Length: 255
Image (cartoon, rainbow, N blue to C red; front, side, top):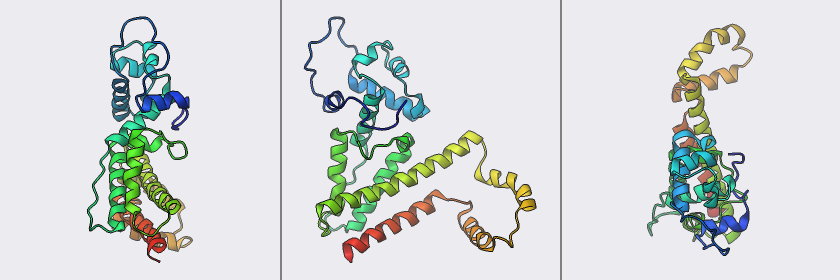
């Protein structure tokens, strides 16, 4: 895709597609449509899941859904609009774990984080999409937002701070999942595990690196590497980062 930002398409057309609003223009003459807009979106999602976001082109989607390259534009006007539809469909279908009446705000917020981590792990290409400032304003996003705001209801926060608290939490999740996605992609692209990479670099590092010049880095790096089995561990980073994010929000909420 030429742009991995949502909200880049023609707004009125995008919103009409997101909300399945009937076209107000006179239908074109010709054969009846053989597929639906959602079939086009599902085909795009299949490609993204299998091959990554860069593989999603209008021609590839047309081939997958079984229509001509030109006719696919009669369903979705372009790639920017298609990306919005893809993202909103993911939001609509993602897990939304119900709250229990006895759950604390921390538990609810942690559940929101876990549900979003699951989505961004299952569909890692979503971490490459900038969807914060101009999100796809469709039913999927609205259902997601409505549900997740509930994590901070009855915390004493005002509406503006509730929105900010949710954005802060989701920002951590997005950042973590993007780092995890990048780390896995490096391993795949290089055909080399982290352990193999360190082993390959160790002989040269031993010659050029003076441990006495960087004693703190040596001590802390060795301790972290031994504890994690690598320089960076996704699960450890998740547990630590989520706990600190919730602690920070706790200062605001609990005083």
